[in-house]
Length: 248
Image (cartoon, rainbow, N blue to C red):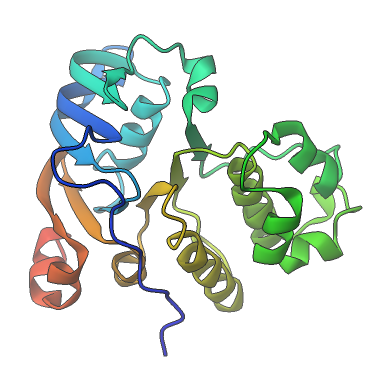
């Protein structure tokens, strides 16, 4: 039985300035162009599943939003302003939270110290992330190196939430984890979708779980978007999903 929680609808009404808008974005690393002609709009409070096979550009798109790639063309707008003009080191302060595949926790700090480093004033507090991830409170005096892979992932997500972002970027948070930990993380992400002040983009290989957690889905192939629509549409048409994912 699914543990997912139905995502809240987008908070912004039609006609409002979107939280994020990409127009004709091309980007990559050094001279290599990975993304081509990416057009994407995300409303305030909207939740997006970013799907596709390995190597199609999903993580590159997330890295581009954080300023970690070379932008070759196009426009990126954040809450109506020019995101490209925001230096990479200022984008988290502007409201973007990133949980990369590598997690990047501080191994020589305790759980509580890891969380304190990023905490900013807002509705996401230490107490609230402990409610979301009780394991972290149980291990708050443990060093980062003393945590399991699943606990490190919980810590990485909790640390990003304490930035009190408007948009949370989750890059394959379920990858390589035991089923019991996946279930716990799915429950937590489901709870996060109920926060109308928080949008998120979920990059995930577990396509069905990602679709259950989100209101909108994008499927990528060879650096381009080949589907942009409602998550429910793909969730209830697995043959079409398989075809888009290249599994047909």
